[in-house]
Length: 103
Image (cartoon, rainbow, N blue to C red; front, side):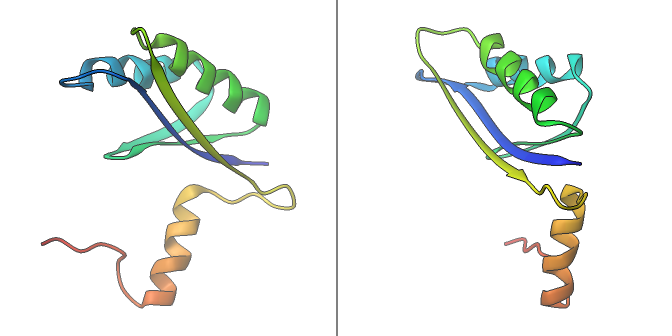
């Protein structure tokens, strides 16, 4: 089983959050997960929900600050394995093109 999630962890602060977000992303390296960071969060793939939750918790705890905001959206498809790129591939097949547009 593959569990896919979108994780966003950030301190509630003024100014750049990049350094603290980097700490959250770096914390994921201690777990058996794949991940890709994008402008809105980090997509994580894990073989179990337990590993996913442990990685998300570590990312949350890695961020310093008086207040930390964490959003975790999980797609736990229990009947079959599906990788994150397969979800994108399906949308692109329906579009008949790459799902990207540069301005």
